[in-house]
Image 1 (spheres, one colour):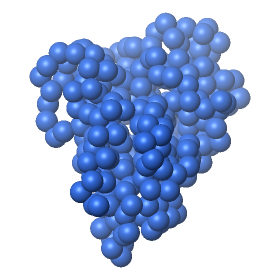
Image 2 (cartoon, rainbow, N blue to C red; image 1 turned 45 degrees about the vertical axis):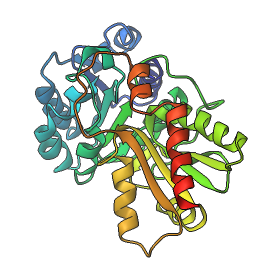
Image 3 (cartoon, rainbow, N blue to C red; image 1 turned 180 degrees about the vertical axis):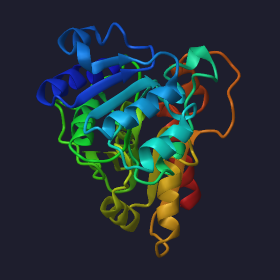
Image 4 (cartoon, helix red, strand yellow; image 1 turned 30 degrees about the vertical axis):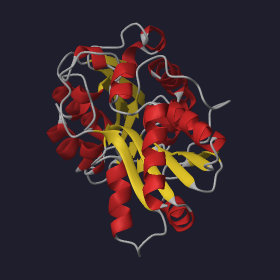
Length: 309
């Protein structure tokens, strides 16, 4: 995903001279081409993320379109005050890009895990939150963000994520993409678990449980028209995310459901536990351990279906 971001930001900078890229002392190699083409529009702000965010806000107020990029927990938790007051309070059009969402940097330990960032970002006034599901969605999401005026958080994986779409989709902020049709279970996936959701949906459908899969690339604003439909017609609606099961997509959907008439569907939130993980391991190990792999997702859905029969 980070390579897709690097290619897209360079393409967009060629079309719009207002685009400025700020880095928190990472991405130097993948941005070499950008720096060569636009040497006056790249700023390595060093390991000073709070300062980088304030610089980005200032640039935005000077009619530029700054894009600030670094590792997810460092560009969210470390500089939350600057995002809240310098960016969101002024509705400054700063694009905040967190790379390595969820357990992408799992082997580096809890300092680099990021399973609370959607919750932090979606609580802030004026902030849009986008979590693309594959490299092509990263490119489409960045295009849509830079076409609107206002703060946005773009949450991406790291490397090695498979490409699901055949081409760059037309990402409409607040409108999910249906990846597979079904009638009994609807999986709403956000972020880099989209391949897991698709495989789980295929396995469920093959076992006789008709399953729709949607890529909910925008957590804020939610696709309320989609939610109205699926909660009125499916038996189970599942939210799937490499994030805490509270506060992120699952929390957003639960809040939406709480304000509606009693829905026909049951909500099943699948995500990480509200805890720190002290074991060392890679991303795939964490996913298997926490039931965020296809087998774990299928098992949770089948168990709930069994309870409902």
